[in-house]
Length: 248
Image 1: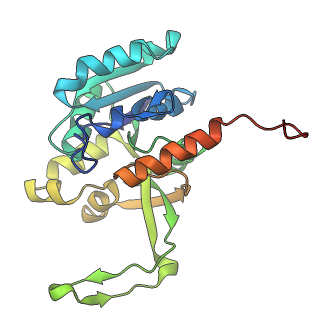
Image 2 (image 1 turned 135 degrees about the vertical axis):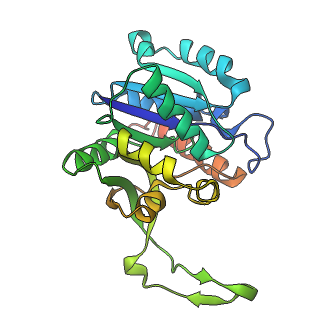
């Protein structure tokens, strides 16, 4: 079984909107639906589970019912998320175990809902990489760092400037075997669950391996109003009719 786990539990505080950012529109589609679209387009995905804030569960189900998915709507489930990203991922995981009876060998492809430009190729790459590894391995999409990364210490002083060639920016999907992910999460302290919001950090702290597949610069995350405006411009450009050879 392969499950797409779409984390959509954010409340939009950094975006500064009354509506959580995952429910904002990009063109004629919400950010969340654009992410769901990408997962439903992958035949490898058996089920998609979305974790959203409690007060948005009913709205999300209605949104999905009206999305035009047809029979594919049966593949999408909605569950109540938690107070943060990790708690929402845990809610999705427990839904998979208790409601779908997902075994430990289930592949879980986790994805931030607010990366609406993810492609099927990226999703498939993480799945194939995990399938070629063992259960003690996690996989993340990532892109090379385009800027120098600085590690900052006390008094705003730079304490390290690692070689950029060794640095990458993590993205999602991040893909794991469900059973191992559950064991790793259960072992984390409350403090670690707050601090380690990335599967890579959790796995490495547990002595496990994490492999990288190519993400894409376009697989960007919408966090700020500036990100949203850039995403809107991108959608407008993509949906703009091509001019014919005569420029008409």
